Image (cartoon, rainbow, N blue to C red; front, top):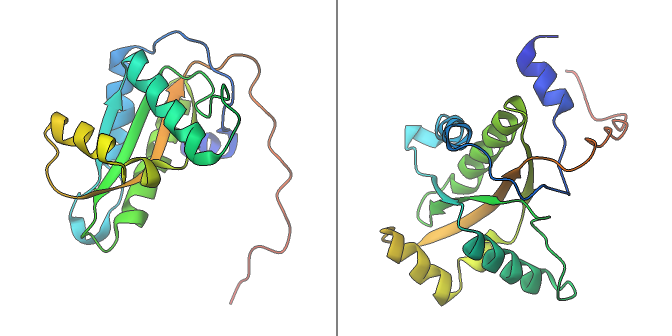
Length: 174
């Protein structure tokens, strides 16, 4: 099995992170991998907002918790110090697919660099809120964006989980 396929087989979602900040160079490589994801009609429409400010990551996690309906104090970002938010302009027909491919590339890149990651939903609901629309405008993102997902990244705390057995009868040849 080659290295890329091996990374795909071995990558796991991490649900417990150390507070240590990953190196900026590693984050830049993860982001670059995301920017090279396949995309509809070569539009390169998805954007990535890299959040490393702990107070902003904590605020995003709190909002995510509220949207998810969990008890106060639950951290849906699992203590990860970085949130790489993937968004696409709302007028891009392939936006959800394009953004999903960005997420996949970034999670594999994080794994290849010895970092953990997990896909966290509810970016769509977060970036429908006026406060977070303003956050994007303050960063210079003009227009209407749809949140695809949060790729939270950091160093795993503890062992990497084992893979669940693969379900059978999921491949059909014609």
